Amino acid sequence: MKFLLYVCLSLSNSHSYGQVTDNYAAKIDSLMQTASPRAFNGVILITQNGKIKYSKAHGYSNFEDKTPITIKDNFRIQSNSKQITAVLILKEVENGRIDLNSPIKKYLPELKQTWADTVTVHQLLNMSSGITSLDKPLIFEPGTGFHYSNPAYSLLGRLVENVSGDKYIDLANGLFENLGMHNSFCYEIDKPNTGLISGYTNSTDEYNLFDFNTTGFTKETWKGFIPAGGIVSNVNDLNIWDTKLHNGEILRPETYGAMVTSNVEDFDETFSDKKKYYGYGVNISGNDPIKYIGHAGRGLGFVSLKFYVPEKGLDVIVLENVYNRDTDIIYHFEKEIRRIVLNSNLIK
Image (tube, rainbow, N blue to C red; front, top):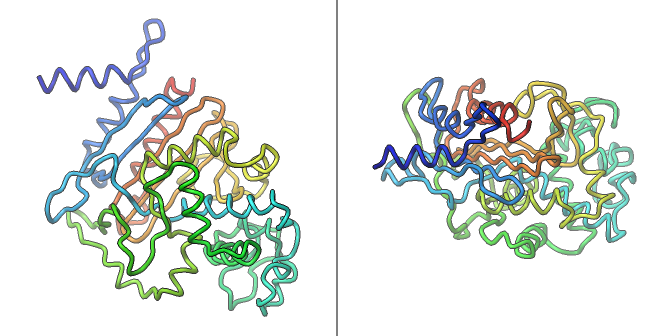
């Protein structure tokens, strides 16, 4: 009976075109059963035009108690938080409070760094500011290169607070509530953070519980990091986010267009094996084989990758609560799932 049920589930996620059957679900299932170079531990959700094409949880939310992970569990989404920050900035652009091409000193007058007079909001958003640290010189002239910068997004969090008069946490949590993302929130030290599962580090077959208290974050430094990587969510809420963001339900068309258009080249191979660019809190693939938009995230015992294919109404979300110490294989499953999907009949 179990075998019959598995076959039915797999076939329901297959697509027949004449004599050709593209069973991407079986390929992902098979991938999830492998243990080399590491084991998969997390959840996957794939939807197309509002219909679930693949949904599965594999592994544990708590290794000590052997608690099975579920599709409803909450994860740290790490750098996927950046697109939420970008949207909050762009909402203020729509309200007329922010000019993307203005120097950030206009909105952050407390900054003493000389580069605050030249770095623009636009350059903070698309990682072309050259900022590596708030107390160091820029590594290149603003707008002439790419450098992935968490400090840049921390500044964006401060900036949106200054122009709106509200706390970043309240702005983000309020946006989630308005969008119906009831399980998404900013992680706060000494708060319940309901539903967040445990994160782990992994080396070979050993899983060690990640202890947030060892990170050295204070309440103040963590508050500064939230806009760069401090948000908690699950696959269902992220699917709401992706669907609404990429279908005009959060930003105006011209603002969204600015978010997902860029000539700033990013060289990280996680998101694409080919040329890709960094927009406002999102990676943007080239058009080969098809344009898709999303981001990856890692740290504090968690790994994530999600991307949306506008032309196909396709959303792919992968969340794991295990962070492998080998940086070469951190995103092993995320990259393989991306390749399977982009070579499937969900795209063709």
